Every structure is written in C-alpha cells, then in structure tokens.
Image 1 (cartoon, rainbow, N blue to C red):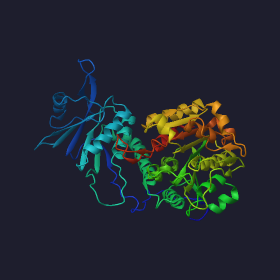
Image 2 (cartoon, one colour; image 1 turned 45 degrees about the vertical axis):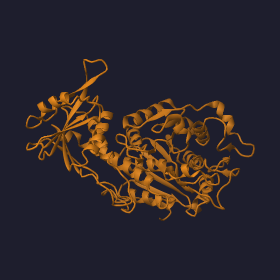
Image 3 (cartoon, rainbow, N blue to C red; image 1 turned 60 degrees about the horizontal axis):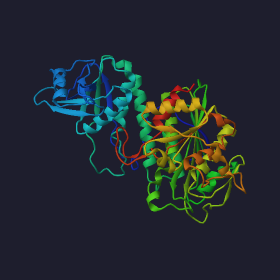
Image 4 (cartoon, rainbow, N blue to C red; image 1 turned 180 degrees about the vertical axis):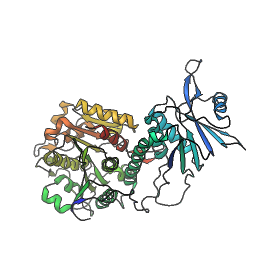
Length: 517
C-alpha cells in the first residue's frame, strides 16, 4: 500500500474480502411484505403472561398485523396452553401440519416484547430453523422499529461462523419474510440493522483471522479494501519510516521484535454536515507473545484476538460512513506484533512516546498501553477532537473483575459515561463503569522516566486506565476508555453472540455515534 493520504472511492456494493480467509454462511435475505406469497413455515409470536400460580408464567399469542391463514391464530392459542409455553424470549415450539398451509407452525417466545427480547428471539429462531430454506414471521400489530431492529440483528448475527475450509454443515435458511401491515415504514430500520450486522461480521472476521496471515500490513490492507467503496473517507497508513520520523516510540518499541513492521492506520470520515469530531482509538496487537516477558502457551494461543479493539473502531467508522451519520470520526489503529527476538524491547527500557513523554516499561506483556499512549498523544496534539474514546483488549483483570461478557468503562465525564453506557445497553452489549482511584496515581511514578507503564501495585485494569489518562492532556475530561478484553471473545454461542470473536463494541459505537451532536 502506498503511504500517505488517500481518498477512498465512490459508492458501490460492499467489498468482497478474500474467500480464503472468510468462508462464512450466506447472509440472510430479509424481505418486508404485507401479503405472504410463500408459506412454508409460519412463525407466530407469543409473549409472557402472568399465571395464577405464584412465580409461574404462561404464554399468550400476540395479535399480529396480518391475520394468519387456515386457523393458525386459534391453533397457536391452543398450542401455547397445551405445550405449557412460558413465552420467554427465544423459546420455540414447532407444530407439524401435514397437508396444510403452512406445513409448519413455529411459536416464538418474545418475552416482554422489548428490543433486547426480540434480538434474543431472532437469534434463537435463526439457529432453530437453520434446516428450513424460507420462513415467514408474522409481526405484531403496531410493532415498534426498535423491535424490528432487534429481531433483524438477532437473525443476522447468530448464524455467523468463521472457517478456513468449505467442510462442515451449513444452514439451509436463506430467506426470511417479515409480515407487516406497512412494510415501507420499516425500510430504514432494516437497513440500519443490516449495516450494523455486516460491520459486526467484519470485526469478527478481522479478529478471527489467524495471525499467520494477520500482520499489521495485512490489517491495513483490509481497511483500505473495505473503505474503497465508501465516499468521504480518507485513509493514511504510516509505516516504520514515518513512525520513526514523527516519534511514535511506543508503537516502534512494541513492533520492533517482529519481522512484520508496525503500522498506524488513520481513517477519517468527514461528512459536510458534521458538527462534532470524535476520535476513536483501537488497540491493534495482531499477535501477542508477551515479548521477552513471554506468556505461557495457554494464555498465548488466542492472542490473535488482541486487535479486537482496532477491528471494532474500524468497523464502526465504516458503518458510520455507510449510514451517513452526521458526525466526524477519525479512527486510529496502532498496529504491531509483540514478538520475541534480538530486537524486542526489554523490561526496564525507557520509551519516548509521541510528544515526548517517557515510560519505563517493567513488563513487555503490558504492551497495549504503550501503543495506545502514542495514539492518544497524537490525537490530543494534532487532531484536537471534541471527544476521545479508546477500546482495547487491555488486561486480564477485566475478566477477573467483571466476568466474560462485560467491559470495564473508565471516564471522568459523567455525561459521556452515561451516554456510552446507554448505547451499550441498547445495543445488547454490556459494560460497567469503574473508578479511577486517585490514590493509585503515585504508583505510576518512575525514578528514571515520567511514568511506569505497568506498576505491580493497585488493581490491574484501573492502573492501565490511569496510565492512559496521562496521555489525554486537555481532553482528560472528554476521554473514555473501554477495557473490553473479556467480552471480545466467546467460548460458546449465546443469543446473538457466536463462539469466537464477538465483534464487541461495533453495535454500541454505532448506536452512540448516531446520537452524537
């Protein structure tokens, strides 16, 4: 890739990525219809209703916008009672109807009918009906756009799989019809859900790709390819020579032990009507051995995911461009392989970051904060945004504190923290606001440099956040950090999350960016 500033191309269809690297199930075709023209399988929603027995719930059918054919509505009411359904979100009951239309009737639990419940229901349906080729879902009368968005996201996200081989069973389901009284009123909702799911898939693809392929340059090439068909995007990729000239010492130190040199990707979405400038920064360690402070094998084998923050911010920026969100976004992804070699940086080295701040590094396995420090300092000094957010698979302490599905959120700005937390919740992801303890700050003091990069005292995730805060300058009160190491990867399927890379953060960022003004 040529270095320097590039203007990306014109509007077109989404880019097709290397099929060797991406062999996924086909994306569902979702139609909005007012009259069914093909009724192989009909899905009717049922919701939870309080039972007379204390603590129990039962299911009741939800009146649909378009009445079902051949007595299916009455049949659904009888089945809900006879099958003792609860109506909880994602519960599914299948009834065979030989010789009749539809041939199969599915009762789908939608819980309280909120967006989250519909998302879970859509995910369960996509998995349960994977052997079908076509299904029709009768939606409730007056269904909200939020519910339709949740259902669509669940349908599109749950079937995701990343494989490097054509072998293995694939779901037959390719077509879903949503039966509504006014289909045109939901077209924008479906488009937003589709873009959100597509960008989440992209982040999952990038994160799942093995590091034997995923070098810093490869990642930069994927960004260029994905951005090529979107207007008003500008891309700059700095290689080792430019990083050296401009003084990005943290990125150079971490990437210095690898034969695949580091990169800094800068992607700028700048619509003409933007009033707010947001900088998004994502940690992009394409593989992390721990460096000289080498990890044990069990901790190293999934370190291809250590660039999930970079994948999330890139995918969110591309999604914002596709949706034409009226906010300026500059995304920075410092990319490096943290490898072991004669040129790897050492514990005890002093690193000079962009802008001149120095760090004494005591642990080469705390490398992510070193590359983020450069990007943060550059953003503050050169880009001068209104708001500054970073996402990083930064610490194992994240999962110790909050478990495997919840990110740790840090900010001194109550309003910013509240708005991001609200977007995360609406998107169906999870984060918890953590404290920035002032009595830990003294642990950052070094006798020979400005800062210790990884003190052994204090809580690990909090100390990493406090270290990053030192590079936020006069944007300290407009900065937010998300340590999303834990929820970036799933050991198994759960609702719309598929095992492997989750694409955590893409959905949340797109929700939040849509409301930034």
